Length: 444
Picture 1: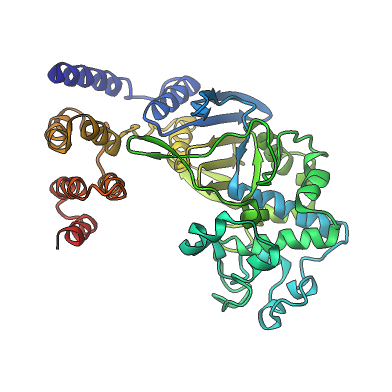
Picture 2: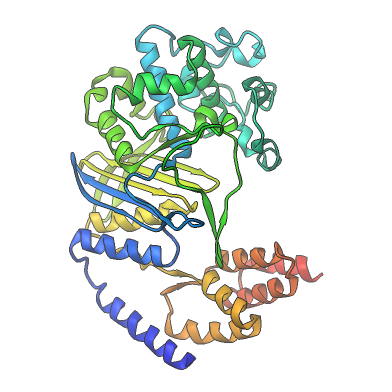
């Protein structure tokens, strides 16, 4: 039976390889590749692509909720994590245009109790362009494992970074983080007299008719919000909870692909783009960063494209918005299983610009875990060597896949299985010090 399955897989792979000698029709090829990613559990969400004002490809994949078997659809709302920063940045510069604040203001103007030694040197513009030098409070694993689950007053979150030593002198360097955008949210509340949620609704969502965009308050019931999951080698599991008071204005908004497209057009090609401050927002300020957004040239084949991008990653959710300024293309990816959207982005980008895309590979950790669960580790090892011969290049048996699979069984107290997985990984990647060191830590 196994030999027959192997033969059929070999035949399928051969047909796929024959068909990849040139890039076919863009949208049918994109759909084929995205379907393959979904089949391999590497995509579960919504993808939208637009040429100018016209949406030319839009499709939903997988489930918004696995427990209730509710499918994702175009109306599904996803938490967008750090894409929130683009809304916070725009609202800040809008308030500056209305005279409610100045980008040259220091943060001690709004927080008199903030340590003056650092607060007097940090301006609002430093916060916007990630050049404040304030450490990122969300980089602390202990904080994420415990305190992130709890509701916090803003002053409690400030305690995690306000008294920390700066990583560099404000304005002299760049380091991406969340602390600065947390402070911006508090400044927005201070100058408007509204909650951050109310300010987003009044100044952005209502004027731009973003009816499916808002603040993901943990105490609120949000209709059509996708549940967040994390993929593991044998399926999905519910992702850890993060209270909205922790992410706040740095990463706790939700939206749909349709609304993000409206937002993108407003910023990059609509009325908002005529504002001098918006032009500053989407222009390089320091490194490849504007205000809450990444930008710069990308080499694609024999051409160079100027790309403006923003991404979000948090437990259970990942999202990606890219605008190709020279071609007037918009690409949006939203997922509720915390996938790496970079691989999806590059796959689509290559097809759009008539490059042959990288082959979509089935995760090796999933293949091996399926056999381990059904037949045991010895059968999985034997099967691996058969599979490696006939599906070379079609399966991802990278170092990371072996590490991920080993960690999965270690977390389930199956140390012997984890050791055998690492031994297999060491045989496949004999030069890997990562696998060798982890194997030594389990066997010494």
